[in-house]
Length: 97
Image 1 (cartoon, rainbow, N blue to C red):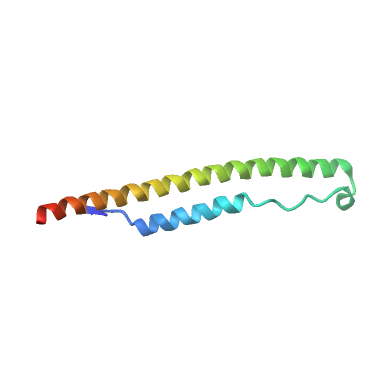
Image 2 (spheres, one colour; image 1 turned 120 degrees about the horizontal axis):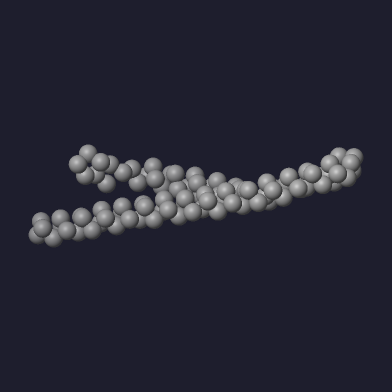
């Protein structure tokens, strides 16, 4: 879309939307299993690692939600620009008749 020198590259926005969508999907992948006390050799160390893993999962879930929100916003922006292009083309088409 172009007007007075301002241009929006809808393909680039679509690529960004897709990349953010993949990031959101990657963030929702299950994390690897946390090893048990047999690996760490100490119960308290195992608990600390489990606590860290739980916090990391919570953080990843929040990031995934934010990424999905950004993806939706990009998708809506693309649709709005496309609709504006179609509306403008329709108006010019009626004028040309």
